[in-house]
Image (cartoon, rainbow, N blue to C red):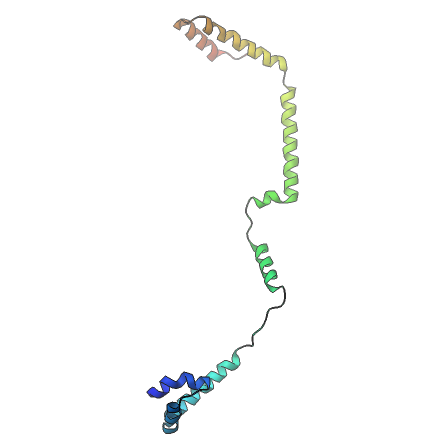
Length: 147
């Protein structure tokens, strides 16, 4: 292809060829054949293009909804599910009732006896300050098992 054809090919395909382009096509059969071949190919490609299609109403909202549904959920979203949350509350209440029953069923006098025994062991430390008494109290505390 010659330079006038290369320079004016875009305008020719758009339907507005220059005067120099048309004159060169009239004089040069090789360039005329090449330009006609390119024009035929361009028309063929244009015929394959689909017409502009407008999406139906609500298309974008349906796409966004589908994206939200397919989004991976976090571990914390499982706690927000109504069924799981209800089961979690019931299990927590059951555990609370069991632990309260265990706490309330322990003997109250034993707790007072333990507190009294500790006071009996610790009291000599406050009254005497000698190192021997402190060692004795330390030995008593380390060997003490409660009564």
